[in-house]
Amino acid sequence: MHPAFMDIKEQFQNTSNRYYFVSATNFNLLDMHNWVNHWKDINFLDTYDQKAKHVLVPAERKHELFENLEQINLYLLKHPEVVDLLEQEAPEPQSKKHGLFLFFDALIESQCKVLNLNIDLPKNALVKHIDNKITTTELGNQAGVPSVPNALAEVRSFEALQSIAEQHQLGDKWVVQTAYGDSGKTTFFIQNKEDYQAVAEQIEEEEKVKIMRAIQCVGTAIEACATQQGTYVGPLLGEMIGVPELTPYQGGWCGNELYQDNFTPSVRQEIHLKTQQLGDTLYKHGYRGYFEVDYLIDLDTQAIYLGEINPRITGISAMTNLSPFCQKTIPLFLLHLMEYAEMPIPLSASEYNQLSLSKGAEGTSSQMILKYLEHDLNIITQAPVSGVYELNDSGHLTLIEASAEPTAKQDHPNRAYLLRVLRKGDYAYKGADLAIVFLNQVLMGEQGTQINAQAKQWIHAIRSAFHMRELTQEEQSYNQRFTQPSKS
Image (cartoon, rainbow, N blue to C red; front, top):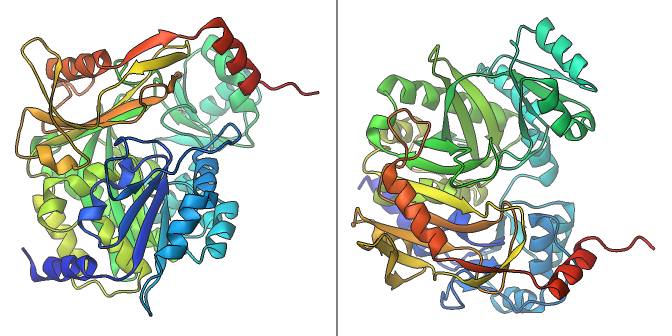
């Protein structure tokens, strides 16, 4: 191992600072407790059945219906068990308590001040500004990283959309995105008036939308860290979008792959360079630390376009930091923590990026996010535990070890680590994450458009491990009152 990596590893193993990742689950920063001393995950969902010492799931208290992750995080930060934990775990002199979030807002920033918890992320106002897909497109243009041919415009009718597309030579099939969205829920594929009318309300309420020419493409994802010493770029991942066995959303992200033959050396090099340029541009705009970029490779022209920038910890953060390259060196996320601790990084960005480019795709790893696909609300009556599994001869899951350690499966090509998200007694609703599974296998077919037989076997086995029942009439009535309260 490079001496710089040994130095960084030792610094975090001996740090007296306290780090708290507050989120619905610890999925996004899995395994960080094995690298960072005094690391604690504070979560709402009990994915480990209270058996993981580094995870605190406070007893559930009465609360309003959550509409987003920010509300869940604020609920956690105000929970008496969490407040007591933060008061009791007083760091040593000259040390601090650090908070990390997937999503946060001004209310969370205020609560963190009350708790004397430093947020190791850019200010929420800046994050929200950069997260806007309109802003992303403009920043990409500034960095010399263009998007798919597009127009940024107000749309109030299908005829207006046609006119804008014709003016900007965008063809007769389009992908329309709103300024903000999640996992494809606000990415719309339109080629006729019927398609438009089905989503018109969501498009027309926006001040501006991004209208792109529809292309046949392959998606990629890569994370990086913008620092004072330059932009450090991680391994390039293939992206799975809209796989119907995994997600109900046509444009929804649902998994990733990492292996050497997935991309040519020239594609890897070009994307690394573009990501460095974006990171350097973000830093000039005041953004520091971790971010993720999606790129689209046009299958007809091989042009590489900017898809979107996610200014945060993301859905590929766990896979990036658990990749063979990051496990052999250091998790990329440690560089984010160093930037916010104002610690000098003992390795230049150019040196790190050369290593990442040449060694980043060693081994084979992948992840799939299994969402609940049905429209009807059900209640889960049986769910698998989080842990390491194999497929038996009959195509069902065999539990090898109930565990909170995803690295336990890394030396076994036919094993997978399953992180169960929803458990017995939880409601399963359309688009809800049931489980996230990490594998050491390629998941997509040769054309990159459909999953292979092996992936289908795993998906069938995992879905079969979840048993559900329909709601009773009383539960249906209660749920309707709870989710659609009277306005009186």
